[in-house]
Length: 121
Image (cartoon, rainbow, N blue to C red; front, side, top):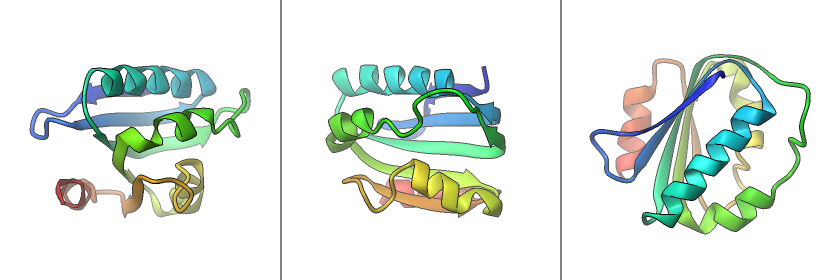
C-alpha cells in the first residue's frame, strides 16, 4: 500500500493522508472509506495530503468517478496538498479544485507548515 491515513494530534478535525510511490485505485478506495467513517462519527473535517514522495498514478480503476466527492463534499471543509511542483495541475484536477464546496490549496514540497497554517484558518 502506498498511502497512510491518520488523525492529526494537534488539530481535532484534521486528517493526514500520506502518499508515497504509486497511488493506485485501491488506495483511493481505502482513503474514501476512512474519510466516510470519520465524517459519520464527526463534524466537518479537513484533509492534509502529504505527497512529497508521490511518483505516479496507477493505471487501473475508474479515476473519473466523482460520486464520493458529490456525496461527501459538504462534510469536508478544506483540503491542502503538499507535493512537488510537477504534480500541481494533476493534483488540483484530481482533488476537484474549483468544482467542489471544499477549498483546495496546493503547497510546494517542504510547505507542510504553510499548509497547516492555512488549514487552521
